[in-house]
Amino acid sequence: MSVEDLRFVITGAGAGIGAGTALRAASYGASVMVSDTNDENGQAVVKAIRDQGGTAYYQHCDVTEDSQVRALMEAARDHLGGIDVLHNNAGIHESMISEGLSLEDMTRETFERVMAVNVTGPWLCAKHALPHLRESRYASIVNAGSTASLSGYPNCVAYGSSKGAVMQMTKMLAVDLAPDGIRVNCYCPGSIHTKMVDDFMAAAPDPSAMINTMTMTHLIPRLGQPEDVAELVCFLASPEAKFITGVVWLIDGGSLAWRGTLDVLGMESEK
Ligand SMILES: NC(=O)c1ccc[n+]([C@@H]2O[C@H](COP(=O)([O-])OP(=O)(O)OC[C@H]3O[C@@H](n4cnc5c(N)ncnc54)[C@H](O)[C@@H]3O)[C@@H](O)[C@H]2O)c1
Image (cartoon, rainbow, N blue to C red; front, side, top):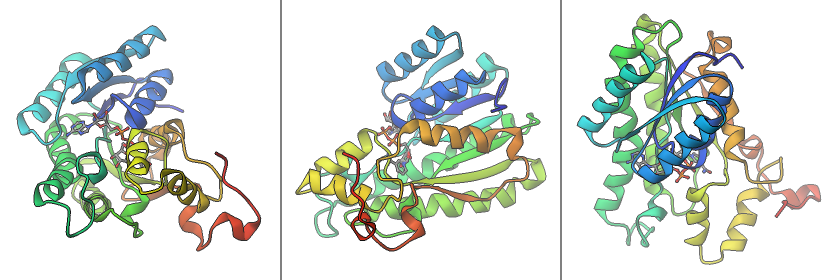
């Protein structure tokens, strides 16, 4: 994977898919600006990268805070010498911040916080990364969509609305930034085993039934792993993907390729 020498900024890189991508990109020779709101986790990712001989720095950044996003991009310029790849990874699901998930129970504050982190955040990051991306020969933005960008799920009205917006923002930015030679893509994971999915399952009335339901539509009968997504992010960011922009790329174990559950095929999900 030729992301060697590319300079990544990854939001929400203290855990889950962001951390997995930071580690994988660094292992391929990229330098990485790790950012998160959880400083302990973010610094641990930087240490892990450095321990394996890679290059990484940490900067605190809440993607909803204009001044912090600007400072993140400036820190990347100062430490990495510029930005080639903005990975808009940070995101939250309402189940992480609210017990009430139905239309009746969820508060306006919860809905607006999900939209702020998942939609305003990537927009702000793109805005403040732009001057730096313009300086790069290999500039691209990789956004975290979801299968919820495309399909309905229970108890996901804020999350799904936000991820639909991320998908559409990807196409709009791909158009607007084409004259600058900046590619913009988005990937849509199915269920990837991270804290987000753990919290979502824990909020379900029957968590073990929920994990079964989540994997029962995956033709590859397991939860995805952060590393699965990290490989796709590295590919979309790499020069090999130079003719790819504005795409919505599923990485969902095949779940949206059909209308069925594994029992129809005589299969069971792996626990
Ligand atoms: N896990 C899945 O199954 C799945 C599926 C589809 C899409 N996604 C998307 O992938 C992305 C990463 O998800 P994950 O499962 O790794 O989540 P996660 O909860 O494991 O990690 C998210 C990270 O983002 C950080 N974060 C939260 N709010 C932030 C903010 N305001 N500013 C900066 N950082 C913040 C958290 O501290 C955490 O380190 C999200 O955008 C999510 O919507 C995940």
